Image (cartoon, rainbow, N blue to C red; front, side, top):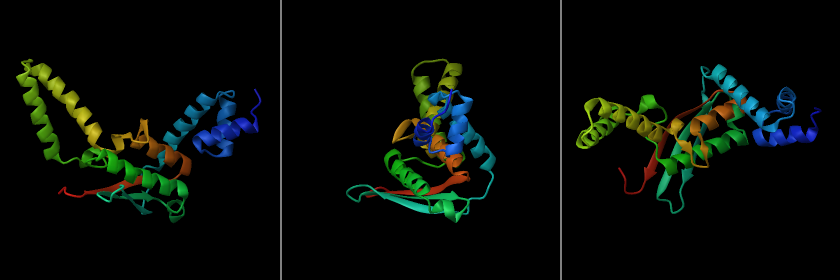
Length: 198
């Protein structure tokens, strides 16, 4: 099957990948648009894995103030070079992350940063619920493990469903961007302020 420039443009519009990458992906998949999208996403994951150890000493601080000025977020997103930090794509990602944090109220960026006392408190609640329901201890243990896993995925920024695209997590969006830009990108830290909350 011959790959037309229209097909390449359509794939590029869908993925924001380079023209040669789009043409190569379409050639490898015999013009199958969906398979080409998947192939480009897989390559993005490979690029992200290769770049993961690189230092991200450049970047931006993005802010989001919700209408009415009662809720605001600041987030630091890092990248490898000043050049990437100044691109619209990078700035848009940082703004989207700030807006997502305002909406989803995560506790931390990664699992490792979730305070131990938060997990311990939830675990205690789940154990009590399980025991009060009259289930045997071994069943309660499995229930608690499952509920804790779900709870953590809901409060960790990188594991949350992206508010603008619930089919993907923040980590998916980040990995995709790393694949497109070709640099390591990290969400370093954030602060969420809400009037009346400590």
